[in-house]
Length: 224
Ligand code: CTP
Ligand code: CA
Image 1 (cartoon, rainbow, N blue to C red):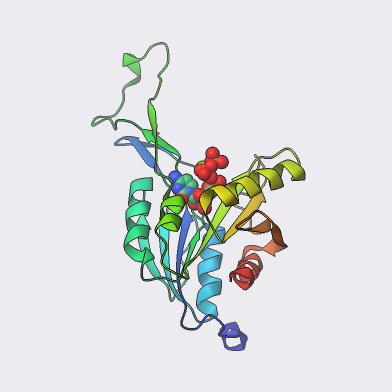
Image 2: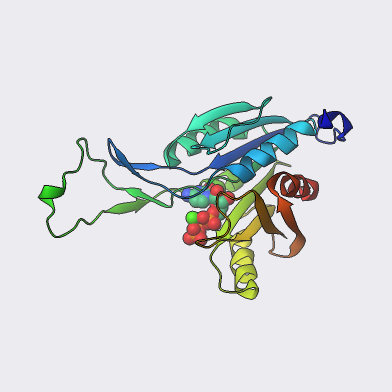
């Protein structure tokens, strides 16, 4: 019902959003994962849809339901999220990369469950780097396509946070970088969020705090 009151300012836009966290299998029963719940990405999908956009949500292990009215593609690993985003990128004018993608995955996946008795003194895992998906997408972007990245940092103070964010915005080739501070107690699985939005050069554009749906709307407001 609230949607009727919303300006349909994203009518005609096609927005591709990734959300959640990838899991990289170690063996048939275990994985390396992260603490992303997918809430902020899902809120962005909901907000964009309510403003008239056609939304495709690439969802990795969401802890919350996907919103109604969006096309959902379920993925698990960094490889799968990359394949899905690449397949959909060209048909969307805006890409928002809210998913937490594994930076490393086990170099080899064990075919059988790893047994503890074979490793009395402990176990070392050999990990390999995953590709930087957003950097690849921004390298091959279509003319006029907007790309929004996220960065969650455990910076000690705000200056350090802004410095890390600015460097990342430039390195990734994104139009916007949504920056937030995370720690053991902050940033994950919560209803609220507090973010700083940086432009492509690392300059601060907006500061937003509140529930994840209002933060989503404010992020959409500053996408060019
Ligand atoms: N990202 C990506 N592919 C990866 C890792 C991250 O596309 N393999 C995206 C994330 O979805 C996010 C942005 O890059 O939008 C920043 O992610 P982040 O983890 O903060 O940056 P990294 O470049 O992975 O650097 P680091 O984790 O070392 O800080
Ligand atoms: Ca990372």
